[in-house]
Figure (cartoon, rainbow, N blue to C red):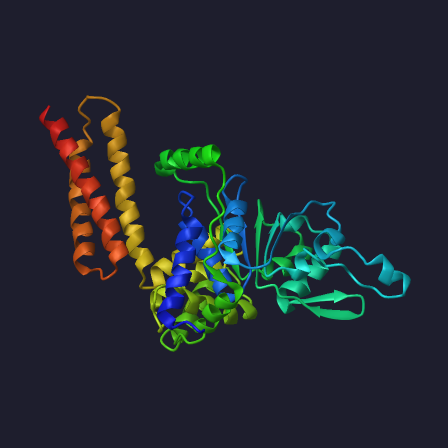
Length: 381
């Protein structure tokens, strides 16, 4: 039975929430993977070891009732390990047939760790498998059921032979270590997993339900943002970040999926924030793209950035307060800065229609008031 629009939105939102639940500070990575599975596109997470890239891909597969394949590639990985060994009996009969049972050609969701270790033989097969969903098996073309391939890598390769493979990942995210303010929560989360072990979640939906969600993406109205999108492409390219024609077109799916995730049937300007996962090829380009988006797009991310800036200032003041009981000459200056920040937060609370932004602003405002009170007590002493 086909689900209605609202229930599909609920499903994909739950997927994103459940995906990030055991992890600390990995909401953005969960968003990238969610957008990938919603659009039947591929995603790659690039970052240093120990940043939960593999664990998140594994959990994503657990949350979908689908055939899953995962593998860690090394320089010595043989194509048979991914695509299946040759059938010797068939080979004796002059037939070139692979035994693909429990291998990548039968997977609907796949995770390949350190994909840029792929040999040229694996690389060539992956290109058609990812783009056309076809495996060339001897003289046969086999249509494969691959929906989304998630990959992880510590670095982006410079070698030209990997550019085509890298371009197959429509969504690319550069993963950073958890910020210092979340370290305590990180310790608690890791300790809990070490103590209790990993518990695979119950699947939220099947691959057929995922196909329904995919179909719903194309019911989203994109008409309001096309002219703005063209201007953004030009602004991003002006910063030296080249976006291929294919990526320019395919970005529409991701923009629509982001809108769907937020329960909208009509794309809003804030949905264009997803370009930061599509345009850049390097961390440096990611920074340039993000700056363009913050300047050009009227979106919630800009407001959240303002809130984060206030929060960062509060942490700086708290650090001064904890250094000792001595009176610091900067406290008066800090007090004035926090009073201005208070007005900014109150304005956000009064004008925003986004409940999540209001909650975030209120949390920071409470912390700000506590910090102001602490400064006043120090000044009195």
